[in-house]
Image 1: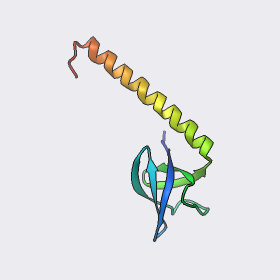
Image 2: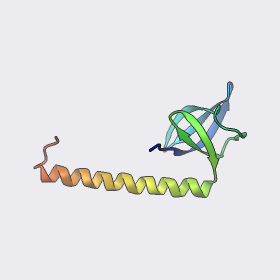
Image 3: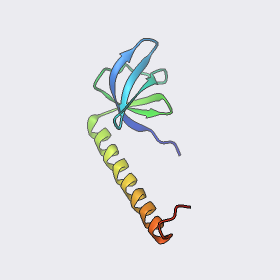
Length: 90
């Protein structure tokens, strides 16, 4: 299974590269796999350093909300396991 993270384009650079903001982290991403133009402020799906497609802001926000729920559930599970092990990490 592949995971693509919604990211906002914050800058366009030379050589078909964009700077994107992914959950507060900025990084460069290749636009080589995208078959349409992208503008600063648009939302895209980022996978291993490549922009795969554009998405609308509503879809991006919903995906980020779901990722947040998943991360919180994972943290709660980790804390429960830690407590079950007497506070010792395996």
